[in-house]
Length: 414
Image (cartoon, rainbow, N blue to C red; front, side, top):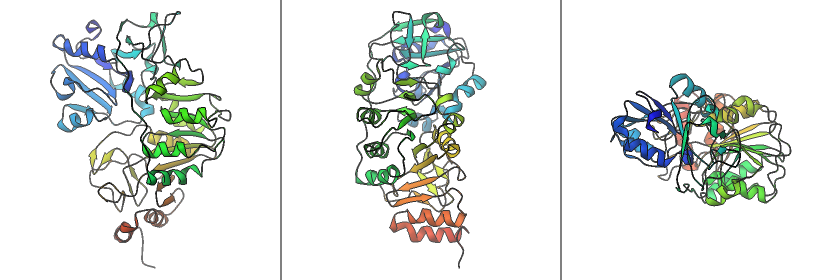
């Protein structure tokens, strides 16, 4: 494996369960033979010594911080590249050497094809352009789509018995279910959905049990979608792109999801530069995008990758899908958030916290939803935006937000 990593190499690793843990172990063990190597990855699930600066010849470049890489970034041993998820394959080709992709996969089938299983993400778009070295594990589900490689397309492979990381659904509470109810009642039958992960997302999927003929075209596929398929809610029959199929670019959930994915002809894993591309999304009528944020100011700017002014994750696909839904015929985009933090601080702010980063522009944001209602923002004046956002803030913060709006010149005495 180390023979394929020249000095100054850029090694590309898929996100989440696409990481080949045994191969990365070997790269760390052989780091003394390497020189100035950068490892590029979104959302790492496995903690490693090199992430914390233990191996001077290896440097991690994150494209989306996770629980594992976040503290390493804060301490200065990991770098972060801002990006829209849809553009990561292009950015990797333009700004790195793309010397080799190392990825987890299924064992080869009788025809000699490997599947990248839970992943297509940014690496599927590099098949045929970049050398691949695979780690085959029997625990990886064999999936369909643009994430398959023939043995003639790889430089080598190894086997391991490592299990996949499981991430159970977040259990929604009453506040989550209230937010979900506001969103679900606006989703028409026949809509195509993109829904993120977390307790509000789980509540929204639960609230759609009485809908019909929904389609799924989403960045992340998790267990909640399985429930809707088995209930006959998700059929995809009205989708303009890949009808009758669920489309995603990576999957993360429990063993139940992974077993359901195995040889499932109704699911397609496609490259993120297709799945998240706003142009792709815009071609589907009634597209509904749902994403979470950490702060919204009274202009409607959403800071979704920082917490209290400190980097927490990255942009991901939020702006990709919000822009696509904006151009979809009958499309809607929802930004969801609880009105306050656990400490009681308002998530709707007169001004974003110093150091916060705008993820979704005010001109793109369509609906903002809290447990206190929905603020429709597109096409509204600054004053209307401020008043609508104040109306869905927690009642304890509305007076101070109104005062902040006057001080900022968004509201004027009548």
